[in-house]
Length: 266
Length: 184
Image 1 (cartoon, rainbow over the protein chains, first blue to last red):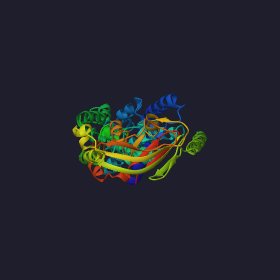
Image 2 (image 1 turned 120 degrees about the vertical axis):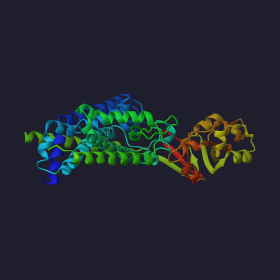
Image 3 (image 1 turned 135 degrees about the horizontal axis):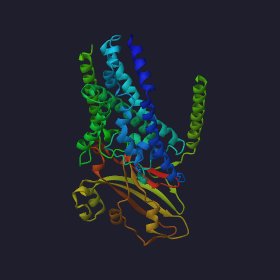
Image 4 (image 1 turned 180 degrees about the horizontal axis):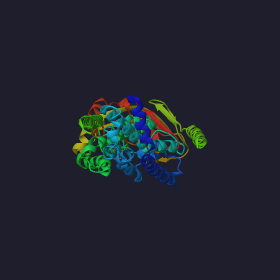
């Protein structure tokens, strides 16, 4: 079977999963609740701007924290457990009769990555799109001190104050990139898990634990949760962002590829 | 079944187009920022302000230039800070006298760069402003200083080293229209 066909097959499988729709629904509910709450409070205000209303930079309500805490779950729920399910159900044995193992693993990783990214990016983009129709896209007034406190030490500070929508889009992209990586982690550890629950929960636990241990009292952090949150409560660096991403991508791909290729199923 | 999907897709597309139109119309009425440079006259309700010169000084330079006591700069974080100052001439062109606190609150927003903002350092401003009279009388003009403390803790080392007076702006007012004086 050609590689392209198996990729398309896996992607179609991922995007037709009930959990995919459920994940998007949960994400959409969170972002819409945030927007409705914000609009209810500020609809009569003339000075409120888009970058205050978007969930990523809205520090006033708990929905920002809720979304970014649940991000790995939203990413892994759709299809990250599918490799584990395929191993348990015997589907893997069937499919490996028709295609090479490495193509199957690669297709699985692509499908998991893309479904995870979509489940995180779509709610954030929806929120940005809807908020843009309610509040104008104007530059934050630094001296009003009513937007997220982005300073020179943070990442993309100039972008926040000169192109706020660009800032939002960059962080949506980052959320999508890391969401895909969480899915890949799930695939990588599937061999050692005993249930699909643990496969899906592992990236979430890793996310929370690293935030606890790698966010320092001095105000800086190398934890993924703090890197992804556009409010940037902690100081994060470009180096931390890139290193985190590369380590996770290479690590999870390497484990999934290495273990998957060697696994004797037949 | 297929027709339902097509109909649903068309409805969603129509909704997106209408919302996009709303986004465009909501952003057409952008607030104006009035930008000025040094030596440009800025006429407001009762006063005219002419920004004359701007300085970016260390604590020592401020003490020696204005011949003030250094007690304000005794703590280490204040010693390491720098100070951005704007010298301006203010003219009361109205028929009424103005209290100095009203003059300073009229123009008292603060300084900003691309990624930093600082409000007026009133303790230092009260020391360096030598006011000839107890009020700004009608027709009177007077040189006044606006000053903010620039804390190195707000900047990366590389930005702090490259910071100079031309990177700063003084914000006279935020509302109803933003009035900004570029110092470079």
